[in-house]
Image (cartoon, rainbow, N blue to C red; front, side, top):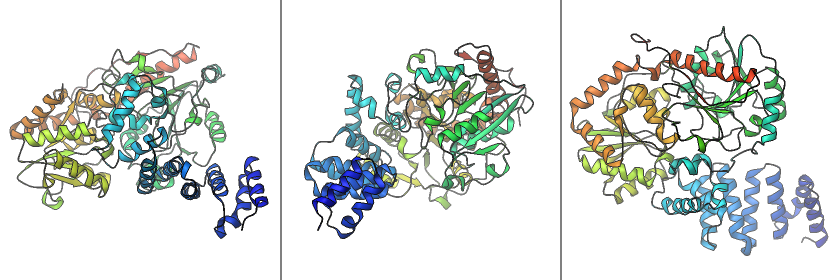
Amino acid sequence: MSTEEDVGKILQAFNEGDWHLCLTRAAPLLTEGHAPASVILVAAQSYARLGHRSEAAHFYEMAAELMPDQAPFLFTLAARIRAQLFEDSKALSLIRRAQALAPLSVEALFTLRQLLRPRLALAELPRHDALVYQAMLSGEAWAFDNEDPLSHLMWCGDERLNGLVRHMPSGQPFTAEARAARRARSHAYGQKIRIGYLSNDVSDQHPTMILFQGVLDAHDPERFEITLFCYTDDDLAETDLQFRKRYPNLVVIRDLDDDAAADLIRGYGIDILVDLKGHTRGARVDLVNRGLAPVQVAWLGFPGTCYGIDCDYIIGDPIVLPDGSEPYYHELFCRLPETYQCNDWRRRPRPPAPSRASLGLPEDKIVFGAFNKPSKINAEVAGLWARVLETVPDSVLWVLCQPGPARENFTRYMQGLGIEPDRVLYAPRADYAEHVARIALADVALDTFPYSGHTTTSDCLWAGIPVVALKGTNFASRVSESLLSAIGLVELVAKDEQAFVDMAATMARSPLRRKALKARIEQNRLRLPLFDTERFTRHLEAAFVAMLERAAKGLAPQAFDVPALPPRIGPFA
């Protein structure tokens, strides 16, 4: 049996911040199963502080069983850790236990919503989202302080509210003093402009790199020195087929802490640092906020303002960043003339499509493709798609979704809207080339809202499939319009939901209309700007030149638009 003296020594080590000693002293009691609740709790806290998340979650769960008055809080802590470990089923079970014991705390509410979204729990999510939305409209701080910025864009298209979200998934927000010190730091400018890109998505199978790798190849080596600073995890890096082997200016900083990585990056004399992450998974915000270059820029990874990340500019275009949106961004607008999204036409695969029969698709029905990731599907989107299917009875919906709870929930939800299960077909995850090939089997692609297709929309257009989109209200929801405009198909952007349904139905009923649209996509694919990598890169380089000219003169950053190059005469490929 444990003694008061044993427990006292364990608690003393914990209170002194010696987590290792605390666990060493607690080990006999924990192993023998005689530890009191107080010891189990400090063991959980010690493991958490040491970064041993699985052990921390285990002991928080044990403590919850022994401390009924604190059980909802402890189950929530355990659930949040399980979610960080991508053990979503365990995490959801723990939140449900907390929910059964007491009204949802703020922490439990936001954890639950994070878990329900990728599971497509569309019958439950709206009431939780509505609670947060009403709190935001009322200006309640807890809603903005806890909302995950990326998840927020999946359901909220209010650009004003987007700009007020203050939760930092990682890192600490920059200060005005730190930003001023970065801009004032002495810097030696060279003959060439030194650009540093920063990302942890460096695999030619990742959507960001699928878009971006062509820009790296197209940069003018006579005017620019390019370095790609990479902190990609091994599991993603191992999916890469060619890029990491062939690109010469890749500098891996994954195993360096932020201080060492900052010193290394500064050693390259970078003039402009481009953060390709924003508030997306695994971003090293504290590294960016150490001040790595005189000019720091947000681009491509996150479709909106990034609270707390020290970037002078956000790169967009006049569609995704229209006049009037400036008050909702702390970054200044740098608008490229045709689209903010780069595309790599040289290395993007376009293999022949398989047969419909080989994928279980009907030969005699209209196939509406929905290829955005499942977390972009919300109840409103599902309802809109159901209206399309009701209007076009001889059609099916082909949804990108893995087997498991998300499929089951979506099928059940659509059935509740009157769509029988045999009209909802599913595509599992596939290698990128295989995925692009199968996209071509759809007749029409249906977009999501308010987080529209980004790489997905350009994939569909690359494969030759028209995309029906909705007019957007924030950056994330305007991207499909930007891409459709850049390939000459802006008429596929519906002004409202009824126009969306009507447009999709009209295309379904008219084989000639679909044929004409596909012919236009094919005609424009290698002629208009969307996939013109070299033209895009020249515009991007013009933006960098303008940014650096101001910085080199000691002038503060200023919003600007990049003028378009003269139109091409004939195809670019």
